[in-house]
Image (cartoon, helix red, strand yellow):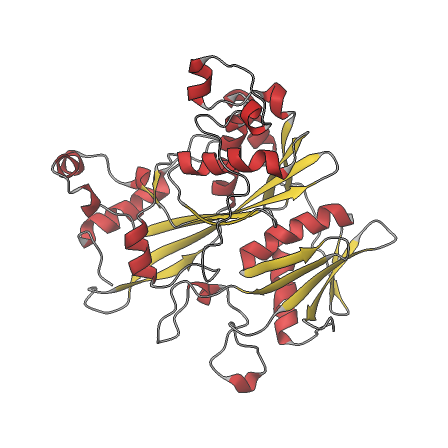
Length: 378
């Protein structure tokens, strides 16, 4: 593929990417999804082979207020209805929690069905296109989007936008998010997991490029969680306070791997939810889950930039993938696995990797998965 902007512009915007503030809720975000360009660049649909959009939880017309979500017909002032604000008194308490690099929101008093339309509206309001919806699993995924706040705000760009050529300016980065809702006894937990791409040159003449994976950005996840708190009616001041408190990671010893199992120093409920987010981060797609049995049914994520030469979006994460079948590693497009979380008598949990028949695996694939999950759950 060829870049749509001069090299100097792209290099400049890449440098500017590191200049954004790290203060809570002060990052400059201006996302825009350029669906045709992304589709052509990546050539195949993301992760899931086709969007599974089921409008089980539709967005109410107008605002996505709590009263509309609840199906109530109470009259509200026109100004409030158009603002899209949601009263905290309607949605209950909203808190941010942290474990390691993971952060999530706890929304008490509301189930996933009630939060779904508000969550969908939030991402659309922030410039994202919803690519996949699986309400039954509590999973939503956005399409790739560009943060155009990283572009230089100079006179040349303004002139180009004036004459309709603003798309000439483009950053070499794209972001997408997977959103997971977990129902709890008191409400719902909300998780955002980030994925990133970076466009790099693939030849000496610097005429062609390809997309490569970027590391997960926990700070960007936290930033958007904070903004969603505000969308739910929390004041900006309280959201900043919650985000600042959750920015300090508590000291925690690394969970050990013993006899082919990862010992997790968390109760089952907490471990179950954290493992779900960790699976998203390492590139294992959850097809289904059975919480009563503690089982996630997973498969390696389908390539997002795979071409005939075998290049893949997941090349930096796909530790299971190999072109040599003799090494014993499974192919990325074939196997299905079970990630099993079990509660122990001491209030802790264990995690094991099983094949689709339920037999525990101790091969190189299982060891790699456990090692990746061990890092994510740190």
